[in-house]
Amino acid sequence: MNPSREQISLSQLFLLMVTFETGSAIIFGIGSDAKQDAWISILLSSAVGVALLLIYFGFMLRLPERNFFQIMEFAMGKPIAAVFIYLYVIYFFYICIRVDRDLIEIMKTTLLTQTPVEILHLFFYILCMYLTSSGIQIMGRIGELFAPLLMGFLFLIGILLIADGDVSYKRLLPVMGEGIGPIIKAAFPSVITFPFGELIAFTMFIPFTSQFSKARRVGMFAILASSFVIVFSCIIQIGTIGIDARTRATFPLLSAARILTIGYFIERIDALATFIVMLGIVIKVSVFFYGGLKGLEHLTNVRYQLFVIPIGLILSVLSVVVSHNFAEHVFEGIKLVPYILHIPFQIAFPCVLCGIVIWRTRKRAAAGNK
Image (cartoon, rainbow, N blue to C red; front, side):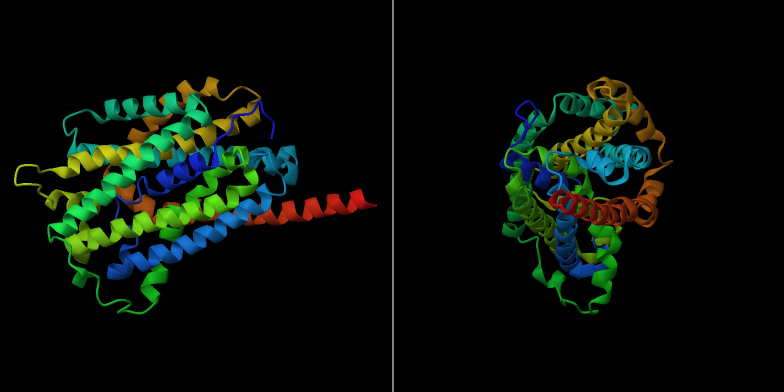
């Protein structure tokens, strides 16, 4: 590993990945098509997520110290790779816009109901711009700070709801009452691509871990840990508000947290939950933002820090106009984005790239042995 390059430790990589995966996934009712078996669809999706991560490592391990875009260039040559890099830049920035819109809608619902959305988007992107411009080492340290807060608060809410008698295990029954069909339908493509397939963004981080040879195992453990946290959130949501309410609710975790009352004088825990979840979403947007900026750096040979402010301001505006309302935003996220964007960019292209890299590295090795 080149010592002049930025590096993150394995523990920082683990916590970044867990925070990234759980940041917005715990707040939504993912897997709702499986009803009370949503938690099973999440576990199934996490297994597929591990398989996807192994595919990503299939090309990263063969070309260490190269990020995703550099690997594309090796596999396909500069002209063709430039086209796909440009598409991934757009994809990463578009996901930034969507995740930011998720957070602002949450904040409008719970915390800042009278604040203009333009101000909220701008403030959020200022945070992300500062974090991204600081580099991956600072992002890793922030992940170490945010992850315990996010996980600790989620488990505290769950434990308090259970202790207060608000969670009923009967709402989780019957297990697989309608068979495996609804579970698979819920898992593919929605839960597989959100949040597990989004780890494609970490192909920009993983090559620069301090102990790259151990990164694959750390990544797999991060997915397992993330799935446990998301399953816990799912069970708390279903056990507290029930299947029907979870399906109807825009933010089921907040609906569950709203029920909680501590000592008959501490209420509206959902507002605090929004603030804590914001920490995870800041990490998530920053990771995608960094990935898109590094793509621009690769295409233009200009340091990515010079793009941070102009691109950040553009994205803050696009976050406002990307959808006319939240209902349209949710419809696009469930019915269109997984099929049009996530499957090609998270699954199809990486599989093809992995095959090309394996073929080219073997061909190069065979030529070297002659």
